[in-house]
Image (cartoon, rainbow, N blue to C red; front, side, top):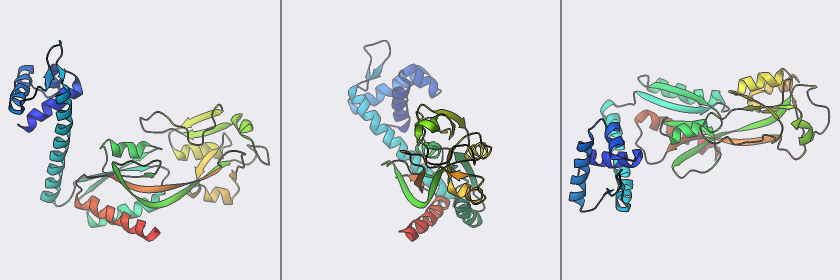
Length: 292
């Protein structure tokens, strides 16, 4: 049994045919077919059902394919760890940050890490709503700093801080006094677009109302300041505007006008990390323990 044979088995499951797997692996179809037959002989188990035009995995093949995926992931982790040990540091560290998170806190962590590990290049990616967590779940980044929406058994997280979102508008955009959802549906609610590929979910969005979507929180803030709509903004982004009464809090019946969200540092469970990621995680732990 070889890793190449396991890769071929997994690729057949992913692509749906021996031919497609061969093309994806830059091999010939006979090469893949022979390799899988030899694996079947060694294991004494039929992995492919060849009764149809396109060979598919048997039930036994599907079960073994799941084990093969686990083995290949462990091998990849082994190689990654070996690379970290050989070089002494990660050449790159990718961090996804949800754009509503307070940047001064994040930058302090990164500044300290950059001073200790100047040879590591930090790649920061700003995302909205679910975007940072999705990039982490997909293996596109090493760490994420994001509001925590739901539990995920594949992830490990540490609480860093909390942010408050406040429903606001420019003075005069809404009539004075307590407002109703029906009245607010007639006015434009400015909403930041989720950067993830998930089905779009509404958090505090009034269904059936008028909506403008924007790609970032600062654009949303400018539109609301210009009296072109209303919406929830992070309180740490609008402190000066609230004090100068350029923005006013809204009171809407049967609607959460103030929401507090926990911001966490997040990483994938069970994956090897290099010294830079480990040191950064230790800093997150220190902050988390000081909050408890």
